[in-house]
Image (cartoon, rainbow, N blue to C red; front, top):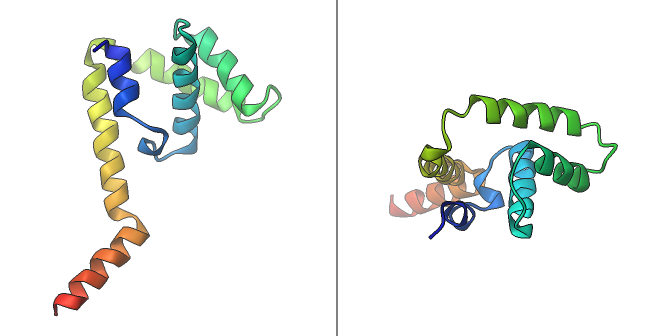
Length: 111
């Protein structure tokens, strides 16, 4: 399976805890779906499309995305990064208030 396909098969919007991370992922995914090259220009255009061209969030999203691009050591480790995101999503789910209440109620039934 191609590396890019593995990424989008492995992750989903809910894998990201922050709204900004979900927005950036959605923009990247949308660009990939069109078969276009994923780069700063195409992702910026898609973010503007998703958030609205006049959104006050766009500059913050773009500066954060540029920081991610500049500070990511290598795309060769992309599946390791995917694993980190997935593990964080599992931890967030495990710690969610609903999940906590469910586990607590199950524990109380055992007593």
